[in-house]
Length: 145
Image (cartoon, rainbow, N blue to C red; front, top):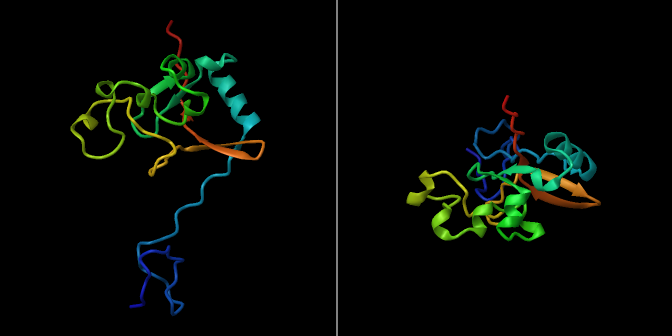
């Protein structure tokens, strides 16, 4: 059995050129960043031209918050759709994003931060060469009849 370095990804072949059977495969490539203009068009299609009405889903707890919600909680521009709105709320009103804490059993919001160790913001947006990781858009609400 060939030696595998546990700290590197496997390329699918062993050191002797045979097919590898280890479970360490390279991580799938990240999707290409979405151009800013395309992302803005999608937001307008889903929620209309008023940006405060746009809604996003926290990738850690699934909580849906609007840009208006973040602003009302006191978020700075860089926190909107990047960190869960729960980070801005008192501790008793939020849950832990990850781990085994007892309060993880309740729904969000949570204390997830997009720039933390477990950064899992699913959408990359390219604005003039600067790529920003952000939350995915929420599904638009269906108007009630």
